[in-house]
Structure formats: C-alpha cells, structure tokens
Image (cartoon, rainbow, N blue to C red; front, top):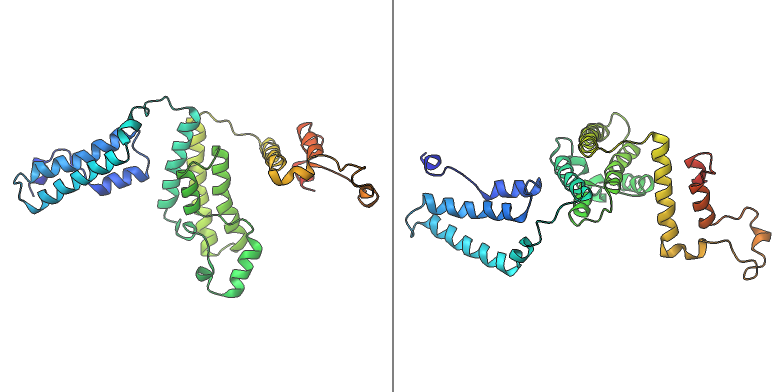
Length: 272
C-alpha cells in the first residue's frame, strides 16, 4: 500500500513493452531511461540488499547492461540525433497505425495469414485459393513495416487495403468477417486521413490516383529482371515469322511510353 508513496515515478516492463509496440519512444535513450528507472525503483523500494526482489532486480540490471554493451548500443546513440526526413516521420506514423490495427476490436480475423486449418473444409480452402490471389494480413504488414520493406507509405497503404479487398472478395456481405472488415477499414481510413492532414498530403482525385498507380506498376514491371525480353519490339531478323503470327504486337517500352503520354483512354485499357 505504501509503494506509490515511496516511488514517485513508477515504471514496469509491461509499460516499456507497450511503449515500444506503439513507437512512443523518440529515440533509444528514452527506452534506456525507462529500463534504468525500473531498476532504480526496485532499489528505492527494496532497500535491504538481501531482499529477494532486490536481488532479482540487481541480477536483471546486470543482464540488461551486459546485453546493452554486447549490442554496442552506445555507439548507435551517437548517430541517433540525425534530423528525420518527412518520409522517416511518415513511416513512424505508419508504425503507430500498425499498432492501431493490431489492437482494434475487429482485428482478430485479419491478424494472421489464412490457413487451411482455419477454414477447416477442403472445399472452402480451395475456394479461398481460387478467389484470393495475393493473400495479406496484419502480421505480415507488421513484419514488413518493422523491417522497413516498404519504400513509401503508399506501398504500406496498398497492403493494408489488400487485406480489406481480399476480405470482401471471399466473405459475402452480411458475414461476420465481412462486417469486421468494414469496421476495421473505417477505422484505418480515419487514421490515414489524420496522417495526410498531419503531413500536408493532398489526396489526388480518383482518376489521377489511378493513373499514378498505373505508372508505378508499369515501371516496376519494366524494371523487373524477368522483363528483359519484353522491353522492346521483337526483332524481325531474329524471329522472322513473329509478325506473321502476332497481328497486334506490343511491348513494355511502348506501353510505358503510351502511359506517360496519356495515350490510353483509361487505366483499365492499359491492362487490356
């Protein structure tokens, strides 16, 4: 009952873990300070050195310091004061959105990859594989975001939206999972709108957004190593009968040029 009279700045590992998950710490120093505060409070309240809790706290503090030194974290502290770019700050905001999604009351069906065991019935699993061509889930997004695999916040947003697209494709309207997806998507859109407002991002009109995405997709395909044979028109000398067989030739270079020059009537025409 007297703990909070003695300890004026309480701190515990659950709080530290939660702050890490929510990306509350601005730098490594803040994390270290909280960890040291846990041990300091332990000594402050348990003043007798042979107290069992005091001994455990002291041993754990030694372990923490050894681990800290082993990973050479102090040297990392010397470079952590660099000025964060706008992109860095936006990525940190995406970290917080991941935490929001994981903790959302309707997140349960989307936390892990869908497996055959989850769906139970073989025919249902076969249907899922047929309908959902690119599976996505929150744990996969969290892992990619933690390892900074997204080159932009748009890529992050695309994966989150893919979770909802897959949900609505596979689960009929009125199904509990479909309803959960609607709730989670609504929550995500509100958080994303706050991100855009915070960083002054102007949302493009739907048609402009679509064209932007088409350009990105075409560029990625063109630069893929597997696309080397499709980047330019087929050489008539190397393949003399090609144009006898193919009456409407097209190549990635031509598509990229037509997209850039807005020669297509709509984004859908590019796919065709």
